[in-house]
Length: 120
Image 1 (cartoon, helix red, strand yellow):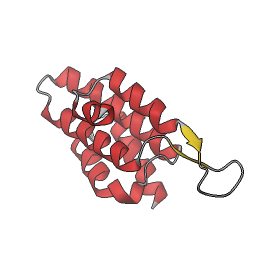
Image 2: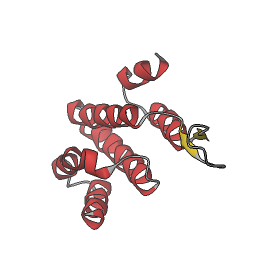
Image 3: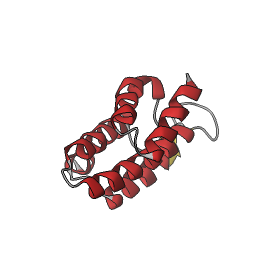
């Protein structure tokens, strides 16, 4: 219920920080049968939905300065999730690539696009 509310909220730096911390958190996995095995605290589908919401929020902002700022935040957020293997790039490749192309004028979007290409 809380996670659904978080996905539905307007995107902000604070909501991205919360999701980032939750997505980096892991809990012991007792079903794996291995000592030290862990599983993500939040389901990958939640992270996918949140990221999709962030990208669509960026596209819908009318104020160019606010849009540029949020696009930069989303790109850095995504780079961190990708580098920490929180999101499966293959699941969101087309969506992220389209976002990067739309905002290619922004340095962080170009860097994210480059990261996507390196991972192929």
